[in-house]
Structures are given as structure tokens and as C-alpha cells.
Image (cartoon, rainbow, N blue to C red):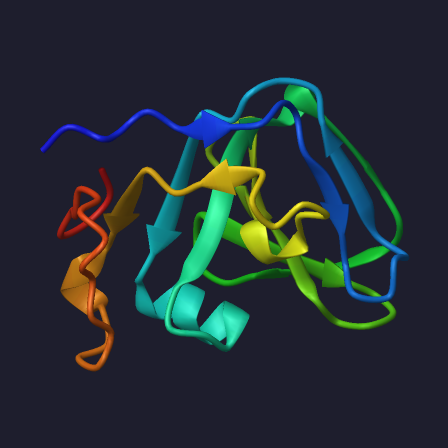
Length: 137
């Protein structure tokens, strides 16, 4: 299944709920996906992690975050003040995943696919027509 092209209205920015952590993209994302894996469910407290993946060099970040390893290959970063989950950093590459919920303009990016649907919660119904991948794309 081929992934749809990402729709973006320019380079977005965003931050946590209290405003202490801020970020700004300086290029288009590599991809925008909804990840249904159990690690993302636990880390976000939701049924999936809606995120945009960027090259680490294609963005700017400020503010104090806490950092913890959610697996052998991924760190999660949250605001040190309000606790909002904002970033995920793969340990195997120079990338940063940014939570779509942290966007200032909630409509700035649209997901292109669903990944890890093999771990999707049974009550989550996917009927948006986006490609679905059992594991990663």
C-alpha cells in the first residue's frame, strides 16, 4: 500500500500546554502518521500517537523537557513543567517526532497513513481511507 502525500500549510510550530516548551519546523516533515502501537498508547495516554517526523536539523526547540526511554530505540520527551508529551526521538537516526496535538494550528498537517494497526485497539474504527500498515510503513 502506498502512503499518501502529506498535506501541509507551510512550516508549522507549536508547543506544550503551558507554553514552556516550543518548537518550530524549518522544512517539510518526512511523513505524518498515526501510530497505534502499544508503546505509543502508553506514552500518550491515548489510542494512538498522531505525529509528524522531521529530520532533527529541520527544526528548532526550546524549553526544558524530561526524557525517558520507552523502548530500546525510542526516547519520549515531555514538558518538564506541565508534563505534556511533545516529542519522540528515535535512537537510531537524526529524527524527531512531534506530537500533532502540540501544533499551534491544529489543521497545519494531515496524517498520511496509519502504522502498527496490528496493535490498534478494537474499538478504534479507521474509516478515513488512509493506507494502513500492520507494522511500520
